[in-house]
Length: 195
Length: 407
Image (cartoon, rainbow over all chains, first blue to last red; front, side, top):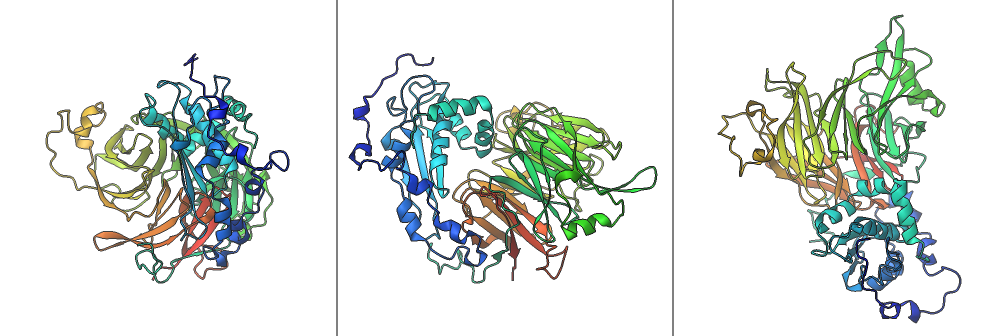
């Protein structure tokens, strides 16, 4: 274990909007609108004449997520070695999440989510797997027009640049997820994510 | 700058028109689509499979499954397709190589049962052949330690290059052998000068000028692009069978080329054109220090070095990683695609490169992993086998042809 004694934040101290929300209508329905919706872009994808034409502003406005919502999605990911979430360990921090909403002018619009992680200690050997789990988590639940960038915060890790480069390499990420050991670890870390 | 009326951003007449996508959709990430060098076939890699599409009717022709434990990242058609065996039969054998994340390359062949020289073409242009059973998984090329990221044949079809996350490039030679199996393959060389994953390789196409340095090199030129942010140029010393890195280009990415020029695409969003300088008297480059060769072990003999310099940077269009670049040997047009879902076309005008057209969200909200030039064979063209189109391959599992009309 890299850091036997990490600082743990009390759950009640964590930034969250979850409590302020109306009670859920049913199990895990919070993001049904995103996950289950028939996205507007699908309507005209097959219709080549309309390619790039029809503006579907409803889709953008309905699905624009803010930093707090991204935080709620990833703060519940479990640390691979401590029995705590990344939120409790302060690896995921609300001020280090940056969402760029879709550009108004573009047909449907790309949004980007940048998450900068702060490992509990600066030589944490598990920084890569933590970053991978956060990236996988967001790519599974966010609509396809969201681009996810996960980095290790500058100066927070001995190899922050190297780990960040790995996490942004599409081929490496894809290959890592085909590695059963890694995929199993990530599944375990995501078990606590209820959505 | 981004107003729709800006002539730079919105060319008056659109050069790119989407054609109906190939059917069926693959419904999963597809990495790339490679057209056969002569026949109307297109091979698309997705998951552990390859789907072959007919370019005549834009539908599925056949599939290759069961050969790999992990994703097929790359495919390469072997250029030679017809061999005459000892009994003087025509063996119309298609051969495809798959490069996989499972660290192996597979050699596959598709046998035409009729043994008639023209039947293969009729068959594929007819497009309604049976499914996968004609493809045979012949043999496995083993050697890489981990994921193979790219594979490519030289124009003559006797040399296959594969590259991997293991930092190496392997060159394999098809030394003939029985056409019934995948042939016999020998390892020619293992090149291990990159400091990190080798992500892309490209052989120089068969063009004039490829072998300007007479008596020093044989005809083949290979370019490799790496995670170490360099591109290396490799050549074989004439007749020696010795391969050497003759140039290191700093700041590269994916590659495509028309020797003596090379185009590279990078995760920094940049697309660069490199050109080999005419040979000149070399200064003393023996001293280490500022020159980039200083750090490189002496595998590059001085007289074998080539000077490649970045001659142009294409207009910046992409806002995220550029995944693919394709340079047409026919029209000279360069096409790029990337993570931002944008497809862009560029043309050389005067001393610089201009943006000709760009399409946003070419695959809806998805990333576009690959773009290639490809001959048209479908009913919509009046010049079958001559007119060029573009084919893009996306994370949405859609393979989409594009008509290109440039005034």
